[in-house]
Image (cartoon, rainbow, N blue to C red; front, side):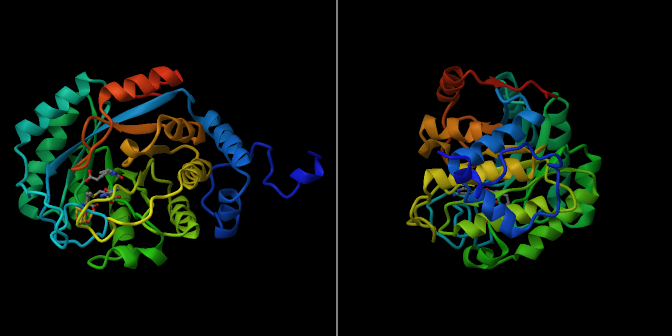
Length: 334
Ligand code: SAM
Ligand code: DTB
Ligand code: SF4
């Protein structure tokens, strides 16, 4: 290979100003479509500048209120619009949530993420969710909640309770959003994110890859996230888990290389954020996950279940980490 044949590729020099909020679609697409080795090399360089490349943060999920959701998100097992066969349940008791969190902490998780299948919380539910935040924080864990849309008062209340993170995904590009969800809009999602940010809670926001979208939708989604007033501290990248009975059950699976490219682009565009390799790991080979970690993913969900779907168990993940020489991040690292 001659030097000239490298000239049309993105620069291999480490970018000097890598925390940016002025990304254009064109430059993001150029990175996304660069030769795979160049993209991964760049992403790994950015990753090493801000993180220990051999440490991965462990989060644990609990569904505190399952099913019966009035929204029509095309991928979701918990929507009343689709027949996934899931049994709906009421909001869990605070004591049970705290007991489950204690088990997760003892198994090595440092962040506890509680999810509810709501369009938005009802005011009558707020006392219980605030008590959950306080109870889990008292165990020394970071807390995260994902409860749907929040108004500014609800966000302030959760912030005062000490909630560390709020998860609210934009899920895909603005263009593709309406093809997947009709009961709320992309603008609604951004509004909740602004309320969360204003209340001083850290933002966890990402999306789903493999919903039949095009490469440009993945790029656009990351451009939206990277150009927010502040980068989300945590960026979950989910691979669609096809759920029987949902409109997206039969979508063609994403090319694994395209998935890894999405992770690498998220790492390059949001260098200091935790990029979480989220849903869909049971359908990934260990080698694909290894590539995702190399591309800059540095957080996963641990445990046998996510909210309603399967996740690789602790044994599988412990074996994978041993094979890769990866260690679990301690609380407060890096
Ligand atoms: N109701 C809240 C909301 O929509 O924000 C919180 C729960 S919702 C299940 C949280 C996120 O899980 C969604 O935004 C989506 O990114 C992800 N998710 C849900 N079902 C999924 C699936 N089948 N495959 C991959 N990710 C999924
Ligand atoms: C996120 O981005 N992924 C998690 C968490 N945030 C709440 C949820 C994944 C859900 C996967 C499908 C299920 O378990 O039902
Ligand atoms: Fe409801 Fe959230 Fe599922 Fe959408 S993703 S149907 S809002 S639980």
